[in-house]
Amino acid sequence: MSSPTIRLGLRDWDHLVPLMSGRVQVPGFQVEIDARDVTPDVLAEPGLDGGETSFSRYVRARAAGDDRLVGLPAFVMRGFRHRCVLVRADSPLRSFGRLAGARVGLTGWPDSGNTWTRALIRAAGVDLSGIEWRVGPLAAGEVGKERLGDRPLPPNVSAMAEGESLVGELAAGRLDAILTPFMPPEFFTPDSRFRHLLDDHPAAERAYWAATGFVPGIHLVTLKKEVVEAHPELPAALLAGLEASKRHWLDRRRLLADTTPWLLHSLTESAEVFGADWMPYGTENNAAMTRAFCEELYAQGIAPEPIDPAVVFPLPLAAVAAA
Image 1 (tube, rainbow, N blue to C red):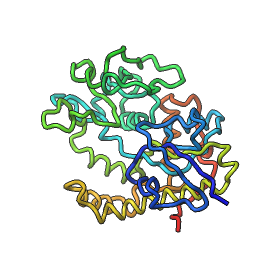
Image 2: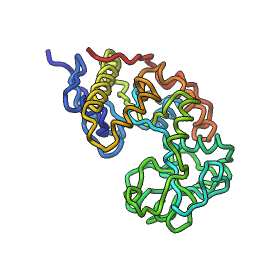
Image 3: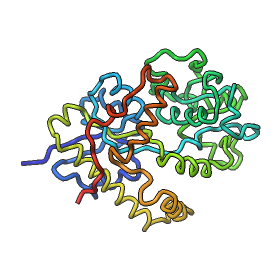
Image 4: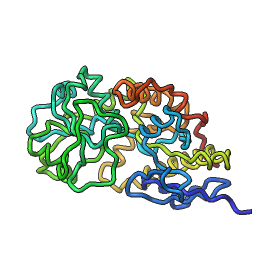
């Protein structure tokens, strides 16, 4: 009897490559991964059994009673947000506290990453309602993304006009800063017009880790409810496969570290700071981060009511590497 085929829509994160290539298997299932350029809308695609999903979108749906997706505590995208605030190269702004009363653009209002970034600004004592927020694409011509969410926007939040972009408005001086999870191409050139707000964002991120014990989760893997009901053993098996893929990837990166000039240094430093795993899977391993995110969604008005973290992961899964 052949194993059930499970089709997932995921972006090609390097730690997923062992699973995508077949080097790592999920016992009992034939997992097919459809590599995507952008995050899929899992529920909108009948051909998908699951895939990569925005943490914010998932949590808000679960909190509203929508249980059509079952999340695995496997965050395929996570990262510190201190690096995600850009200003002009000649800007006098060099701290989150200086953003009080500023004009700030961002790529999406309810987005997971931007929620975490606003949390940093809020923690610096800045009243978010005093900032003039503009929501729009990083670069002109970007389409196909829901940027405003499904709730009424606060009065200090507005959408950018057709043809405008965060990069263009920042360069022109009509914005003081922008929040973006991805750097514009020119950021990697010596004469970039932009820089990070923080002069030493790695130091700030290390301090954040010391204070919280987690790296913020942005996207997670979800499965459709009917797929889980048909295959109740799938969530644990898939989580084990994701864990095995991540471990295999890390072992290979440590062996084949000559893919960037300083990758070995980065891997060594990460092990020193974070220990064995900076992106742990499992419900308990992510409990503090999940609780903090739920609190922040409500504090920022993204969620209309407080969210019980217990609704986020209905299956108490632990990360155990597949044999």
